[in-house]
Length: 315
Image (cartoon, rainbow, N blue to C red; front, side, top):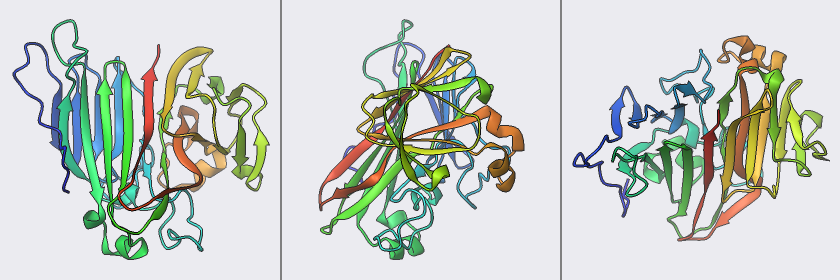
């Protein structure tokens, strides 16, 4: 796809250790001299792995389809332009659940490394991977269902202190359009019974387990004891954190976004999903998903929107 500021390739001329980037079997893999790494599948631009300090932070089902036949169960699926089943009376109404971004083939636009913040050894301490999806890359079915001229650039930045994922949406046409977006992140944890999610206290949420009714989060910590499917909206705090056994595990900072979804399928829902394996995998994952899903974002012709998250693994 056409992009004015396509990132340049990483220069091998640096004096110290440099990030490594290579493509293999339909995915792009990047690693830092520290050993931290990220893997992104071109189908859906889905982050499949993020390792820091030798530890995996992303959960992917053992039965996930990685051949482009269906969206990946696990990782960081990218939801756009509609969250959940689209309303039939909306412009997205003919699209499948969660839209088309997670089941479209994205173009790898290239990589670039940091220009500052060097490691003590002189090497670059971050690498950015850019992926593009536009009207021309969509299937004919998707273009017919959502006939707007748009451009998406998804930037995945691996740094020694975390992972950043940012989505830029641009309206390339003359007609305005509305959209929702969500980073449906499956975080890997050791034991769901020992996990608490903090930073959503005093926030209003829509509980999909209770007929999509609104409630107030009175407890400062969320603990998972059964199936959870909640949309927290207009969150005042920028950071949501996951603790395990009372110790910090992950910090998730919203960038330009005000909503978050908390999801865990628990026992029966996990059993009912053919691509969710092992069936007790719900004990090893929790979804804390940043997005703009309460209502719709509107872009006039030529306008753009950007939002995403910055994650830090803590030990």
